[in-house]
Amino acid sequence: ATSRKDAASNRGNGNVQEVGDHRPSVVDDSAESRITIETSSGTSPSWADRAEAVNVQSSIEREHEENQFSRVTKEHVRFLQVGRKKDFICYERINGKEVNIVEGLELHTNVFNAEEQKMMVDYIYDLQEKGRRHELRDRTYSEPRKWMRGKGRVTIQFGCCYNYAVDKYGNPPGIIRDEEVDPIPERLRDIIKRLVRWHVLPRSCVPDSCIINLYDVSDCIPPHIDHHDFVRPFCTVSLLSECNIVFGANLKIIGPGDFEGSLSVPLPMGSVLVLNGNGADVAKHAVPAVPTKRISITFRKMDPLKAPYGFSPDPELISIRPLFHDGLPSSRMQETQSQLLRSSGLNAKDFPPLESSKSIEKQYLKSKGSRYA
Figure 1: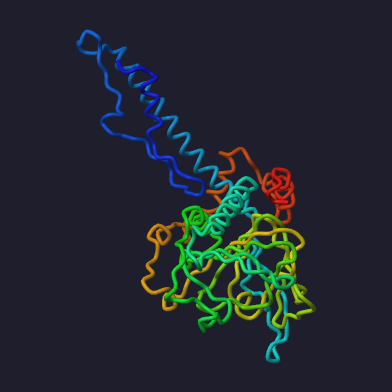
Figure 2: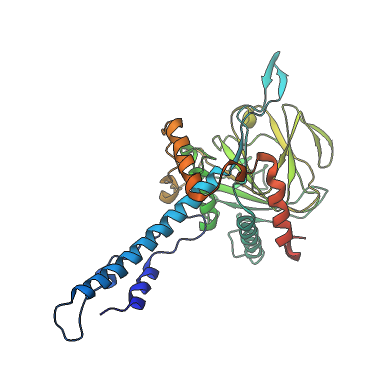
């Protein structure tokens, strides 16, 4: 008869998913993986043989179900731990009217834990090394000469080639439609999946491009409104260190890397800032000179009419489904969340408030090596 060891080895035949891919693993149910019942004499198996085989199969199935439930439960619990602030208020007088210039702005914290952040940072530094070795397309990686304070940060862009200013070929700011860059790598697609699954970005606006900014000390981003070659909303993931972003209909430039606005918002590590509505199109935003190294990843969806020639959407990305269906009644949502809390052994006290990202930052800084200094 097939031994317990052989039966248990069938558990390893499922697909192993990488970090960020939340599809449940699949158990191989092929004929080769099914348990067969034989006796050494070739006679019909006894009731004991049959019972033993059934017990082994049932044990495998139970363990698979428990692992699958555990995986799904963990994702739901992490989803519930995300802090969400959507009530930003900052009024300025525009055309004679008082306007909340940051209406539509959202800050989602604890979207990525310390270990996930470390893996993301390591991966981005690996991409930087590839860029320096010319293993990425020319316009994918850019490391200009630092000619003044705050100018010359490293950028890595995927999905489309975005021109910040008129270039030497006369191309205006915006997406250069006849220029190619590398497609979005799988690791970054995993981030997009989480943003959509965890309701940080709507399914109607799945990003198909991104720009990674690697800030050195004193690097900054001057006041601007993101180009309308990209639709709204868009978002920025913050990594490596916390910094402030300032907003204002008329941001003041005090000096190199020094900007003054009506509202300053701290961006904790592992957080995602979503810009939409007035927060994207009325208020300008800027990142003053950073005191330490920082990395940001900005994810945006291109206007289909401005996308590169020959561009086609990634089927894997456009098929992403949110963790909870948007149409789920609030009462059912609360009931589902309560069930998940009970099954996980957690309660409301275990969920960190919005401002608690400092504890995540301390854990992360503790784990950092000299590479991040």
